[in-house]
Amino acid sequence: MTSVQREPVVAHRWERMWMLAKIEFKLRYYENKLGLLWALIKPASQILMYYLVFQVILGQRVPNYAIYLWSGLLVWQFFTESSTGMIKILQTKKYLYTHTNMNKLEIYLSHMMSISISLVINIGIFVIGSLISGIYPSYHYIFFVPVFINLFLLSLGVALLLSSLFLLFKDISQVWGIIVGFLFFLSPILYRGKLFEEKMPILNYANPMAGIIDNARAVMLYEQQPDWAMIGFDFVYASLIMLLGLWMLKRLGPRASELL
Amino acid sequence: MDQDYALVVEGVSKTFYLDQFLVDTLKARLFSALRTKEVKILKALEDITFSVPKGEVFGIIGRNGSGKSTLVKVLSGAFVPDAGGKVIRNGSSMLMSLSIGLSHELTAAENIYVTGSALGLSLKKIDSLFNQIIEFAELGEFVNTKIKYFSSGMIQRLSFSIAVNANAEIMFLDEVFAVGDAVFKKKAVEVLEKSWLDGRTVVMVSHSMDNIKKYCHRVIYLQKGKIRFLGSPEEAIQMYMEDNHVEEEATD
Image 1: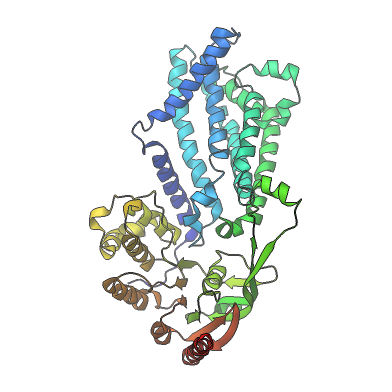
Image 2 (image 1 turned 120 degrees about the horizontal axis):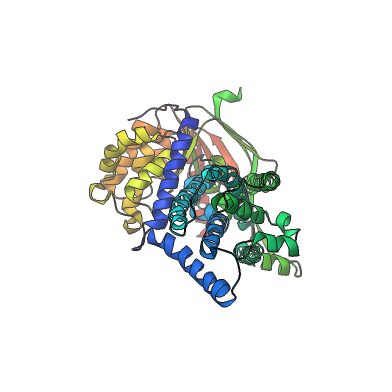
């Protein structure tokens, strides 16, 4: 029927990753009755919850607090969906690499692509929401690109680290659950970045998500340029985590079929 | 010189450490430091060295537990050999055991695209082969059904049907004829003869001595993880039969 034909492998790599990303996206949102609506209900309920607690009950003073929350949660959701969401990826996607020579990094990248599709959709809905509350998007949105690059590198790096460690420690998700809980409250999602900077200045640098969220807000809400020094710092930070993650996968990845 | 070989295997051993208490969590690791370890060591493969020239059909025989499947997994890259061992594969490969790795969460159609692509086919190529694959697998009505609802026979047929078209240079076949009904077995043999033996390197594990004799150029006979014999199929099979006979008498 067929004989051995060498096709340009690299050329197919991207179309394959894109296909996997689309299937992943479909699995996530079209498999249940409410479908894509879930993607809205979850952040909407979170916004409502925090709004009730911090605005209505505690009466904090950030203007447009709902939109403020929404923008922070949007970025945060990308981070948790990739880091927490990909801990078991080598297990769930084992069928892809055990029988073929498929590069494991392709599996990670396709997953990141599908989460990025969600982010784009979420931002689209966010723009509509902010228009309704009277915040008009400006050209500053183009500065979201460097912010996104940092977010992407950081999220992928953490995902690589966690999923490689999962091969040795099956309870890593519990440990990460605790860390992520701390990070959430130590990021300027619920309160102003300034507040945070005054009380614990070190956290702006220790927690890379802090700078990313602040910068995302600068371009999405305040028609400002991002803090470029912070962008640079976060880029180095995220790249280092990414390199550590790649090194981990290179070290532990070959034993994945065996350990899972 | 290595370029003439599809596979070069040097000093490959594989040891499994079977801890009585599984240490694969942080908690277990913390506590296991405190107690004396009772680790069972299983040497599945010991010092295996051989090479397979391009285009050869290479057989692996041996009793259950002799290390055949472990060897195939090490050769295909699914398992990593112990430190010091070396496996070189010149070319892309495919490992086929009961299946070729399909996702139960995906439909038959999606699996064809995902696995086909993982096996080195372009999406365009899969488009053109799609109907042929479905037809061969006899799954026309179930194209858009998730394969978790399939019977094991249906999954095997789908696997086979995708694997026929795999764009891999080295095929690792682990007992692919052991399952399926008579009609399907006949198909499997056809696939092997028409597609897989055609200019490719094939490493075949089988309990069917007829198939080994018919297709293999050379055979390795494994006994308790070591090479008992490497050479012509006839001699290997004869030795294997004699050993089995001796063991049978010993147990009587």
